[in-house]
Structure formats: C-alpha cells, structure tokens
Image (cartoon, rainbow, N blue to C red; front, side):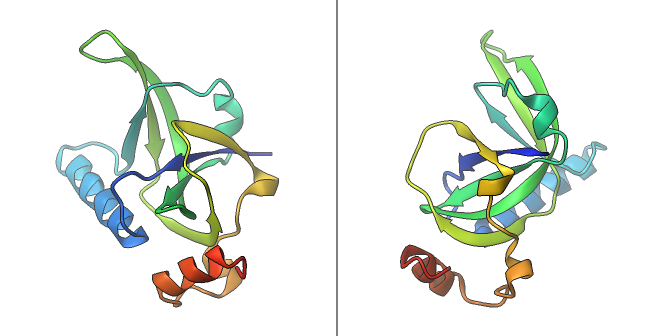
Length: 143
C-alpha cells in the first residue's frame, strides 16, 4: 500500500496558484530539454522512500486546508552549494484537487497513510464548486 507525504504549500493562495506555478515549472523543464515534472526541494529526506514511490502523492495544504495532491515520481538526495544535504521531491505535472480537509500548521512534511488521505474531488462530484465555498464547507465539517 502506498504511503504519502503532506506539506504546506507556502505562498499559494489557491489551487489555481499551485497549478500556475506547476505549469510554469513544467514549461521551463520542457524548454530546457528536461522531463516535464516539477521539483520541490526540502531539507529532510523521507526514510520510507520505497513505500512513497509505490504510488504515493504529495498532498498540499493551502491556506489551512488540505486541497490538492501531485503524484511523487522520484526522490533524490543531493548536497547544495553550501554543502547542506537536501532532497528533491519529483512530482508529476498534474495537480489533482482533493476533498477539502482542514489542517493545522506544521513545519516540514509529514507522512500520510492512505486510509487518512482525502479522496480526489472529482470522485466526490464537487469539481465545479467555487473554492471559497469548498473551504467554508470544509471548515464547518460538512465536506
């Protein structure tokens, strides 16, 4: 069974912001002759990489609500120019909206078991609902 990661999407105001950022990074990668995926760099490397790469996703918390995910397609440790160990999380270019789920702030990333992961939004039939309404319903515990 796949294991997932959950992380705050700092700087994004909405899922559309995240999609725009991913599209820009994907376009830059294609223009440079690289594979069309985005990369997120983090300080710590997951110890359970094999489980994560067995179908896992990075779930994004946007403005206090777990809102979207991207499939994890690779994890690569590296050392930056300052000699600090880092980790590249390589993500598929598709941003998949999930059922909104309120989340408190935290630092770094956390593991997320499949049983605790929210369903994809289209599976719940709420894809066309305005983002503000989805966020409000999630805060009220109605989604």
